[in-house]
Amino acid sequence: DTAVSQTPKYLVTQMGNDKSIKCEQNLGHDTMYWYKQDSKKFLKIMFSYNNKELIINETVPNRFSPKSPDKAHLNLHINSLELGDSAVYFCASTPTGFGANVLTFGAGSRLTVL
Amino acid sequence: TQLLEQSPQFLSIQEGENLTVYCNSSSVFSSLQWYRQEPGEGPVLLVTVVTGGEVKKLKRLTFQFGDARKDSSLHITAAQPGDTGLYLCAASYSSASKIIFGSGTRLSIRP
Image 1 (tube, chains in turn red, cyan):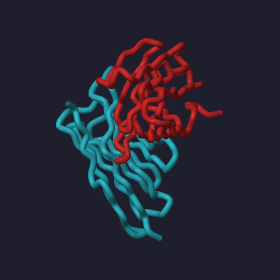
Image 2 (cartoon, rainbow over the protein chains, first blue to last red):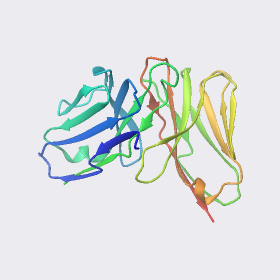
Image 3 (cartoon, rainbow over the protein chains, first blue to last red):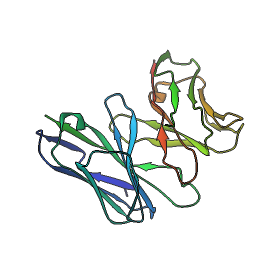
Image 4 (cartoon, rainbow over the protein chains, first blue to last red):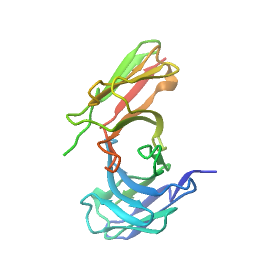
Protein backbone atom coordinates (compact mmCIF):
# COMPACT_ATOMS: atom_id res chain seq x y z
CA ASP A 1 0.00 0.00 0.00
CA THR A 2 1.43 3.35 -1.04
CA ALA A 3 1.42 5.77 1.90
CA VAL A 4 1.31 9.00 -0.14
CA SER A 5 0.12 8.59 -3.70
CA GLN A 6 -0.11 11.31 -6.31
CA THR A 7 -1.42 11.27 -9.85
CA PRO A 8 -0.52 11.67 -12.59
CA LYS A 9 3.20 10.88 -12.44
CA TYR A 10 3.84 12.68 -15.73
CA LEU A 11 2.05 15.64 -17.28
CA VAL A 12 2.99 17.20 -20.61
CA THR A 13 0.90 20.15 -21.69
CA GLN A 14 0.90 23.38 -23.66
CA MET A 15 1.36 26.87 -22.25
CA GLY A 16 -1.93 28.42 -21.23
CA ASN A 17 -3.66 25.15 -20.35
CA ASP A 18 -5.07 24.25 -16.93
CA LYS A 19 -4.04 21.06 -15.15
CA SER A 20 -4.60 19.32 -11.81
CA ILE A 21 -2.52 16.98 -9.68
CA LYS A 22 -4.18 14.83 -7.05
CA CYS A 23 -2.72 13.53 -3.79
CA GLU A 24 -3.99 11.08 -1.21
CA GLN A 25 -2.39 9.78 1.99
CA ASN A 26 -3.49 6.73 3.98
CA LEU A 27 -1.26 7.40 6.99
CA GLY A 28 -3.87 9.22 9.04
CA HIS A 29 -1.68 12.36 9.03
CA ASP A 30 -3.28 15.72 9.77
CA THR A 31 -1.00 17.93 7.68
CA MET A 32 -0.36 17.79 3.95
CA TYR A 33 1.99 19.80 1.73
CA TRP A 34 2.87 20.66 -1.82
CA TYR A 35 6.55 21.16 -2.64
CA LYS A 36 8.05 22.16 -5.98
CA GLN A 37 11.43 20.75 -7.04
CA ASP A 38 13.14 22.69 -9.80
CA SER A 39 15.71 21.53 -12.34
CA LYS A 40 18.49 22.14 -9.82
CA LYS A 41 16.75 19.78 -7.39
CA PHE A 42 15.88 22.55 -4.93
CA LEU A 43 12.73 21.68 -2.94
CA LYS A 44 10.59 24.69 -2.12
CA ILE A 45 7.43 24.60 -0.05
CA MET A 46 4.31 25.94 -1.75
CA PHE A 47 1.35 25.16 0.50
CA SER A 48 0.48 23.36 3.67
CA TYR A 49 -2.95 22.27 4.95
CA ASN A 50 -3.78 21.08 8.43
CA ASN A 51 -7.02 19.15 8.66
CA LYS A 52 -8.40 20.84 5.51
CA GLU A 53 -7.34 24.33 6.61
CA LEU A 54 -4.68 26.32 4.73
CA ILE A 55 -1.82 27.16 7.11
CA ILE A 56 1.09 27.96 4.77
CA ASN A 57 0.92 29.82 1.47
CA GLU A 58 4.40 30.68 0.26
CA THR A 59 3.69 33.62 -2.07
CA VAL A 60 2.76 31.28 -4.86
CA PRO A 61 1.05 32.89 -7.90
CA ASN A 62 -2.74 32.94 -7.80
CA ARG A 63 -2.74 30.58 -10.77
CA PHE A 64 -1.98 27.82 -8.24
CA SER A 65 -4.99 26.80 -6.19
CA PRO A 66 -4.79 23.97 -3.67
CA LYS A 67 -7.91 22.24 -2.43
CA SER A 68 -8.30 19.84 0.48
CA PRO A 69 -11.71 18.12 0.48
CA ASP A 70 -10.72 16.13 3.58
CA LYS A 71 -7.55 15.64 5.59
CA ALA A 72 -6.47 12.65 3.50
CA HIS A 73 -6.57 14.51 0.19
CA LEU A 74 -4.80 17.58 -1.15
CA ASN A 75 -5.13 18.51 -4.79
CA LEU A 76 -3.31 21.18 -6.77
CA HIS A 77 -4.91 22.99 -9.69
CA ILE A 78 -2.82 25.20 -11.94
CA ASN A 79 -4.40 27.70 -14.34
CA SER A 80 -2.82 29.29 -17.40
CA LEU A 81 0.33 27.21 -17.26
CA GLU A 82 3.64 28.93 -17.99
CA LEU A 83 7.01 27.55 -19.08
CA GLY A 84 8.43 28.30 -15.64
CA ASP A 85 5.91 25.99 -14.03
CA SER A 86 7.80 23.00 -15.43
CA ALA A 87 9.09 21.10 -12.39
CA VAL A 88 8.44 18.05 -10.27
CA TYR A 89 5.66 18.63 -7.75
CA PHE A 90 5.76 16.58 -4.56
CA CYS A 91 2.93 15.97 -2.17
CA ALA A 92 3.91 15.14 1.42
CA SER A 93 2.31 14.66 4.80
CA THR A 94 3.25 14.82 8.47
CA PRO A 95 1.55 13.62 11.63
CA THR A 96 0.63 15.80 14.59
CA GLY A 97 2.69 15.44 17.74
CA PHE A 98 5.60 12.99 17.69
CA GLY A 99 7.30 13.07 14.28
CA ALA A 100 5.53 16.28 13.27
CA ASN A 101 8.60 17.46 11.34
CA VAL A 102 9.11 14.23 9.43
CA LEU A 103 7.73 14.39 5.91
CA THR A 104 6.48 11.36 4.01
CA PHE A 105 6.61 12.15 0.29
CA GLY A 106 4.78 10.89 -2.72
CA ALA A 107 6.75 9.83 -5.79
CA GLY A 108 6.28 13.18 -7.49
CA SER A 109 4.43 14.48 -10.55
CA ARG A 110 6.69 15.74 -13.33
CA LEU A 111 5.03 18.63 -15.14
CA THR A 112 6.42 19.72 -18.50
CA VAL A 113 4.98 22.85 -20.08
CA LEU A 114 5.74 23.27 -23.79
CA THR B 1 14.54 34.63 5.41
CA GLN B 2 15.71 31.39 6.94
CA LEU B 3 18.15 29.49 4.76
CA LEU B 4 19.84 26.14 4.93
CA GLU B 5 23.19 26.02 3.21
CA GLN B 6 24.32 22.60 2.12
CA SER B 7 27.77 21.68 0.83
CA PRO B 8 29.22 20.40 -1.32
CA GLN B 9 26.69 20.65 -4.10
CA PHE B 10 28.25 17.78 -6.05
CA LEU B 11 30.56 15.00 -4.92
CA SER B 12 32.01 12.21 -7.02
CA ILE B 13 34.30 9.77 -5.25
CA GLN B 14 35.70 6.29 -5.61
CA GLU B 15 34.08 3.30 -3.93
CA GLY B 16 35.61 2.72 -0.51
CA GLU B 17 36.40 6.37 0.22
CA ASN B 18 34.88 8.40 3.05
CA LEU B 19 32.92 11.62 2.65
CA THR B 20 31.16 14.30 4.67
CA VAL B 21 28.24 16.51 3.71
CA TYR B 22 27.44 19.68 5.66
CA CYS B 23 24.26 21.59 6.42
CA ASN B 24 24.45 25.05 8.05
CA SER B 25 22.20 27.88 9.10
CA SER B 26 22.51 31.13 11.00
CA SER B 27 19.36 30.23 12.96
CA VAL B 28 18.75 27.59 15.62
CA PHE B 29 16.76 24.55 14.48
CA SER B 30 14.15 22.81 16.59
CA SER B 31 14.97 19.65 14.68
CA LEU B 32 16.81 18.59 11.56
CA GLN B 33 16.26 15.73 9.16
CA TRP B 34 18.39 14.10 6.48
CA TYR B 35 16.68 12.62 3.45
CA ARG B 36 17.92 10.64 0.47
CA GLN B 37 16.26 10.94 -2.92
CA GLU B 38 16.71 8.60 -5.88
CA PRO B 39 15.73 9.47 -9.46
CA GLY B 40 11.99 9.36 -10.10
CA GLU B 41 11.13 9.08 -6.42
CA GLY B 42 10.37 11.33 -3.50
CA PRO B 43 12.87 11.98 -0.69
CA VAL B 44 12.97 9.28 1.98
CA LEU B 45 13.87 10.00 5.59
CA LEU B 46 17.23 8.77 6.84
CA VAL B 47 17.34 10.30 10.31
CA THR B 48 16.00 13.02 12.62
CA VAL B 49 18.22 14.82 15.11
CA VAL B 50 16.80 16.98 17.87
CA THR B 51 19.33 17.43 20.68
CA GLY B 52 22.43 19.62 20.33
CA GLY B 53 25.56 17.45 20.07
CA GLU B 54 23.52 14.39 19.17
CA VAL B 55 25.19 11.68 17.07
CA LYS B 56 23.22 8.98 15.31
CA LYS B 57 24.52 6.06 13.28
CA LEU B 58 22.79 4.18 10.50
CA LYS B 59 25.14 1.41 9.35
CA ARG B 60 27.97 3.29 7.53
CA LEU B 61 26.24 6.67 7.89
CA THR B 62 26.95 8.91 10.89
CA PHE B 63 24.83 11.99 11.52
CA GLN B 64 25.88 14.76 13.87
CA PHE B 65 23.90 17.73 15.17
CA GLY B 66 25.96 20.74 16.22
CA ASP B 67 26.03 21.74 19.87
CA ALA B 68 24.30 25.04 19.07
CA ARG B 69 21.74 23.29 16.82
CA LYS B 70 22.66 25.46 13.85
CA ASP B 71 24.53 22.88 11.79
CA SER B 72 24.66 19.20 10.99
CA SER B 73 26.87 16.78 9.10
CA LEU B 74 26.44 13.45 7.40
CA HIS B 75 29.52 11.24 7.19
CA ILE B 76 29.62 8.12 5.04
CA THR B 77 32.35 5.56 5.66
CA ALA B 78 33.58 3.28 2.87
CA ALA B 79 31.10 4.61 0.29
CA GLN B 80 29.46 2.11 -2.02
CA PRO B 81 27.78 2.60 -5.43
CA GLY B 82 24.42 2.05 -3.70
CA ASP B 83 24.99 5.26 -1.75
CA THR B 84 24.63 7.26 -4.96
CA GLY B 85 21.77 9.74 -4.77
CA LEU B 86 20.67 13.22 -3.76
CA TYR B 87 21.10 13.94 -0.05
CA LEU B 88 18.92 16.65 1.42
CA CYS B 89 18.89 18.24 4.84
CA ALA B 90 15.66 19.75 6.10
CA ALA B 91 14.84 21.73 9.20
CA SER B 92 12.19 23.64 11.00
CA TYR B 93 12.76 26.47 13.44
CA SER B 94 9.83 25.70 15.69
CA SER B 95 7.26 22.94 15.96
CA ALA B 96 4.74 25.07 14.10
CA SER B 97 6.97 26.51 11.39
CA LYS B 98 7.39 25.33 7.83
CA ILE B 99 9.96 22.70 6.95
CA ILE B 100 12.62 24.04 4.61
CA PHE B 101 15.25 22.18 2.63
CA GLY B 102 18.90 22.66 1.85
CA SER B 103 19.99 22.83 -1.78
CA GLY B 104 21.04 19.18 -1.79
CA THR B 105 24.25 17.23 -2.40
CA ARG B 106 24.40 15.02 -5.46
CA LEU B 107 26.61 12.10 -4.55
CA SER B 108 28.07 9.75 -7.12
CA ILE B 109 30.14 6.74 -6.12
CA ARG B 110 32.33 5.26 -8.84
CA PRO B 111 32.92 1.49 -8.72
